[in-house]
Image 1: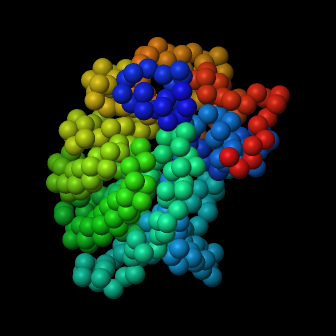
Image 2: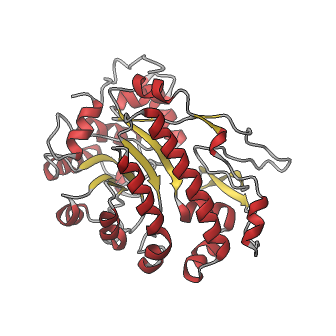
Image 3: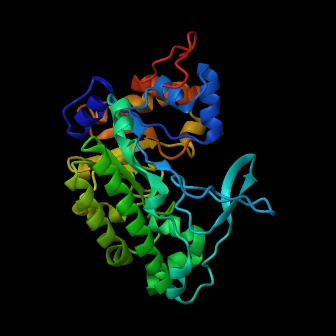
Length: 368
């Protein structure tokens, strides 16, 4: 099987030659893996660990992101949907993170004022090379979108502030609702144009919506159903109409929302933080495994940090036994952090059967 055949067979519960894998890592982790394998690009590193997915994006041709006198900066699409916020690199416990330091709408009262703001448009994207990109990646599972697509709670909080965003789902804040509408229209058009340009060759569309904390729901299921579900319904119908599936990044304890997500037509739920309440992998499989594929599940908050390689190998083997015919894409429960030992990362992929490069003979494909 090639990468694409493996994933599609797993999604259809028809078995596979090895379990599909999908890698998420912080830049420091990816750099360490590149150095280990002796390659000079992240794509080559993904080949080494056997990642079965490749992203297909239009080219960004919009205004370049700015850096400001105070050292703050903008982040351009596709990593962020730019809505005026600015970021800085902060260091916490020896780890570096990108955090907002300026949120332009946190005190905005009148949603009509948003009409004056130069939000990104799909005219900032060039779709002319999409067909070429899908052809170059024909052996891989081709994925449009990313975790920033839709992503109303986290995405809008960058410019509105998390406190006001969460309160807005309880009060129906008109500024929040207006921002949701603007963001939805951009992403819906962005993805539809990508699907059209690919002429049926996109397998998955990635979106995001962090619905859970470490302990439970981030917003109420009632607020989700009132404000977010109608957008998901429209988006899922559009994507499915082009023959693609939906993979949704959703952190934390999202169990309260899973039945509704399945009802709406979600195909893959990632990243399955098994340490959170309600996110037990076996229970999710038993209740939703025939209708919903799960992705992730290898806990990077504790288990992958402290466990021995033997214990990690045993945990991967348990997943292989639990999902013999498909229904799981193996990977970390979130971006792998720098505190996860390199050998533990390699053990996870080696146990999954995806690691293609031997430690003694690193792959030198460079820019695969």
